[in-house]
Length: 342
Image (cartoon, rainbow, N blue to C red; front, side, top):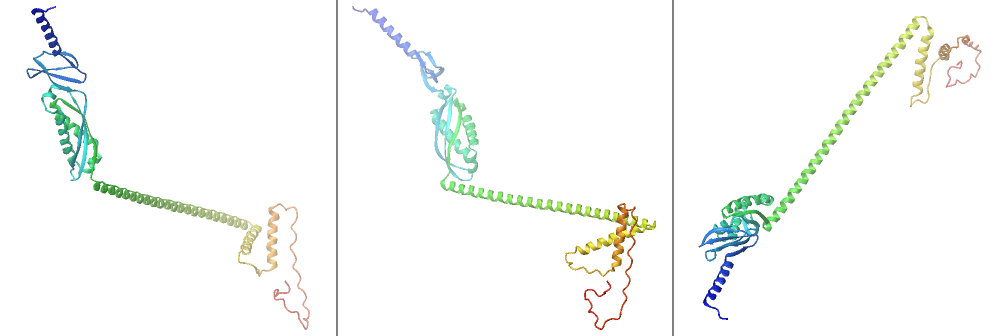
């Protein structure tokens, strides 16, 4: 079957339309944005999905990834404020928010973000001392994030995070810091020991003070009680003396006998209870002792109710023996009894 000229033209037109349709249909994957240029000028941005453009007039200018991306910052040397050299590396996370600005406001977007982050790391870390640099990593991350994010805003970029991964001081500096930390801890331990010893001494002194105060108070209380006891004893003695005086004034001779017998008995008890007394010599008359004992017995009978029985008569004095002519050989005197009549 031979095709005519009209048929060939129709076939050519159909093929051309199919080619135009394929050229005008653009499929954008999820997470990407395509910029469309018409005769080299940006017109619009294609969203994910199926999109149509005008073939031969419009074309795709840039294909941008709008997902959050990570950028490794290589290790670099940083001079701190106190002239210490350290090595630091970091990692940055960014995301494209405006595809047109990212495509047409900056060339080589990743290289621009990388260099901007590196220069800000040097400026931020160089304005801090070494000790502050090692102990305030969160503050460094916050300052870097604020500075870099403000710098990339005209590019349609959002820097979500900047993290310092590692900070490496020189080896000799690390050894010096270790020695300093050890010395500081030893000093702190000595200070704590000294404070503990001081507190212990203070507590012991307080305890001794309280003990002395309590002992003095106890001695004062004991002296007060002894004085009060002596006062009560003196009052009782004075009262007894007054009663004896009144009884004597009333004509009661037994009261004076009781008083004298009591003092006599107490004197004998004190003499007999002496620890260094072995032999007691009493140069007293037997009649005095007997009269005293007789007075004590009379008082006892009067006190214990023996009034119905008449008191026994006092003992008669023994008649003196008649001295005869001494013999030629008188007996030798007794050295322990000089008076033979007793």
